[in-house]
Length: 269
Image 1 (cartoon, rainbow, N blue to C red):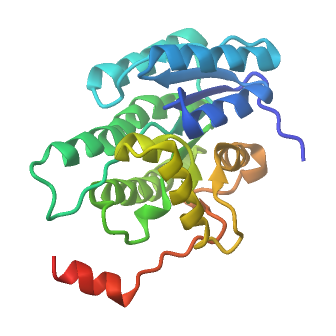
Image 2: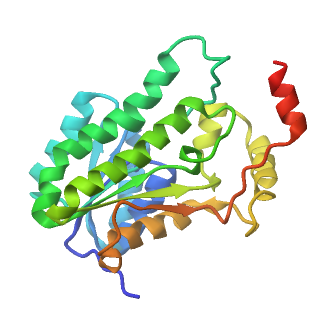
């Protein structure tokens, strides 16, 4: 199967680390012209340099906070001013947290998550949808299995991803007559720095957590960034030309389980 994005303009948000970095690198290998967005200038520059080495195509690197209107507007304007078109929008930028309804002391955590994970995606898509209509392009939103599975401790993040999943379905229905496809890719347990950032656990503890999590995966392996990137690229390609409004799960068959003792413990807290 030949995947080729030569002369296609692809915008990847949250491209400075993790799944975003893996996705950017794979699109670069396939010849795409890249617009990369991130908040960490040093990391973003390093990723852009690695992408340029793939095919010699220099990406546009945009340092912006997509949780702000200014950051979203800057991203949309600079991308279109530079490339004059857009073929693929990958909404990957997100923040997470560990919170429950009983441990949330104020609304800041909730607002921070929804500001980037939902409002930022809505706003950026709103601004770039007309350009995608012109090119008959497509959108890939990066969600998570916690958008459909129930997990204690993932309250605002799980709600945000559930909102993103439905956003995909709604916008896919609206844009389908215009020739624009909109889909979601939902990673399962994936080896990135995301969990370490929101929990602050050590590398040793993180590896132990991954090992424990892998016992709930029938295929026996946690995902890595390239697993998600390959699905994003496939969904964005012409090989998926009639796929829209779909949530594609990449998780090795991950099974959420909860024991009765866990339930008893939580009930008494």
